[in-house]
Length: 204
Image (cartoon, rainbow, N blue to C red; front, side, top):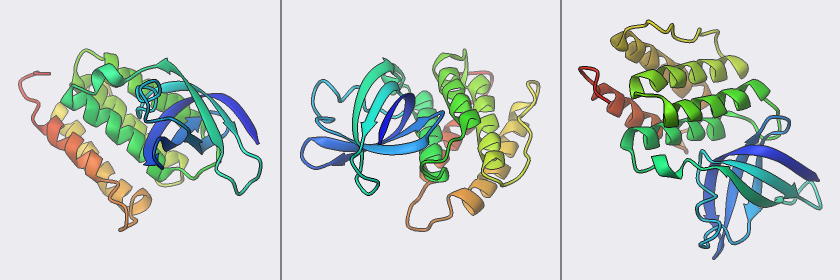
């Protein structure tokens, strides 16, 4: 197997003394996993950050073997990880993507939408703006994997109504996509929603 493709890094887990197993979302191959040698070293540590856009090359000699992955950084989300709201947003949408999608099945609309919501989190003038992008992404993901037909939030939806929408979607996500009791996929979302609720008076 050989894959060369732009990808969004969605998860990274330390493996062995120096490496990491990463999960990457590509437009044509869906979610794919690979082992990155030296991922915990000084050179690659800033590359294997969830939310980063990378140029990926994955090579495997057999279907049962975890591919070896080489990554080149294209766009870094690192500068936003020191901002609590942005960090929580990046953490949630990448966690959701990793937990909800089956590996090896392409979802080009989700790939494009994830890149767009990450850009919104990093560059929208306020969290009130990119919160709508998060809600729209959740609705799209639920629809694409076969659960519901939720519409994206209208641009003029009041903040309290958007929070109520997110609460409703959270129930659907927990029930259909993140129901595995062995893996608490909703913890990252709980942190994000709590920080959204602290927004008042147009702050942030």
